[in-house]
Image 1 (cartoon, helix red, strand yellow):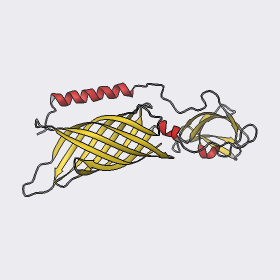
Image 2 (cartoon, rainbow, N blue to C red):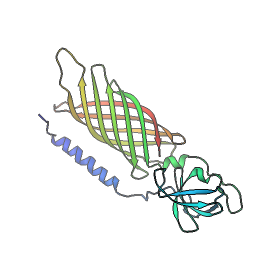
Image 3 (cartoon, helix red, strand yellow):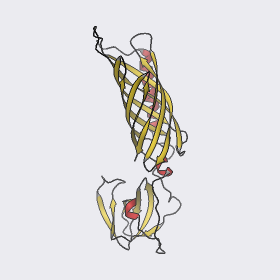
Image 4 (spheres, rainbow, N blue to C red):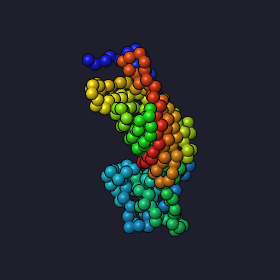
Length: 261
């Protein structure tokens, strides 16, 4: 028989959904990092050609090619992609590597540098794996997150739990709030909800698998390392909403590595 959620569980769900809808609306002027906001530098293509894509990624199609000697205007940057405008008013995205040998109007080679802290602050997507302790059991977690604004990230997470007497699988949806996204060591707060399935190890008397709703709150921090890599450390306090009156409280500690793009 399927257990119907109690009023406490329904209120929790409603609160989390409302919070997500508030944070999901456009806010705080989120946009692609633009160090060229106050001016638009012009560079000269010195390679035989550069390829313009419709978006900032290898998966976007090439729609135009600018040739050697063309002057292109730099408009915006997003991680290692630059949005440029050609003399024919074509606007597209060019990978950083294709601009390595471009020249300024005086004929000097331009150093576009490598990925840095600004790219870390302006990331949109991130994913990673981490391991740790879940109420005395070992845990392995994988996640993917999308930044709704510089301060708010929506995240989906899956966890495998390996214990002495039982194993478990947990899936959750989380909201992460970053008060200082521009810091190299960037702290955050997180809340979320999900489902946990517990599978007791085989015994003389076969125990029934259990599925419960779960909610959590926690804190953590991302440490930018270099290029696209960061170290993540996190603590969560989980509340397992059981069908009994004695809801369980479980502490989880974990750490691991992530990449952003």
